[in-house]
Image 1 (cartoon, rainbow, N blue to C red):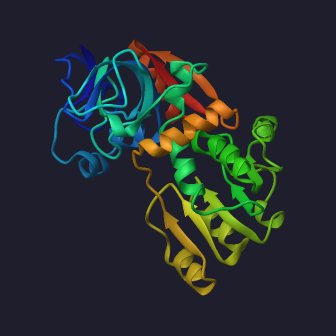
Image 2: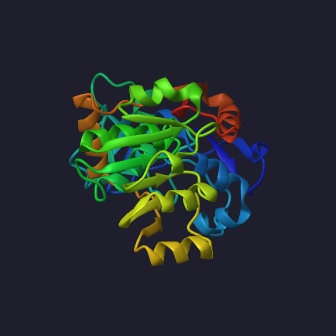
Length: 313
């Protein structure tokens, strides 16, 4: 089968199409004929940064990047009972670790997958994996109906899922994006929109119960000042916070923390149910052929993607 192998961190040209053996599923795994792959900012960061690549993969080289997959089960391990050959499945595979998604086939633990709803395409399913799970795992244990929630970058991959999930929980949702994406963010269910280019959100909102920060830096510092004492902020860009941020958070008893999503089949089932109910819908900004995976990385590198980028096999 064909797969994109990464021998060392660096530019897009380091993702090299190669012919390798098809994997054999372990007892707890299924073999998936991949039909669509979602590309995330974390894919780009790990591909570019030697230190981060080593943190995630150790010294294993070459390796296959990617974790977001949708496809058809072609074989099952001896211990698998929930799936059979022919099932359409999707999931975030072995994150963080070896997901091996940039390939024609991948083996995945059955417990990390869910069946794709009948009316959902492989492309839509692949889009509803890492970013959607991040939003779900961040929000579901931290907010409740009636909470006042600020979601930064509401038109982005995580953000556009977070707006929908927060509304499904029953929160009052405020979201930032550019003016160009105002109508899109409001269509997701946001109660208020703030244009981050022309408006200072810290002058508009106050007394927040929760903030989802996908930007960091000054945005995180300003978010602290509009969050209620004793409440919380999740910041996605980095686990490292400035002394100023930590001091303010401690003074006001605000829990500021980093979050890293993990593969979870039960959460995938929750996303499946939300898709079936119509309360969660992915926005696929652009699709690319498997042979144009480099171009998909280039799109993600722009940091101007509305929703998700998907590679179709």
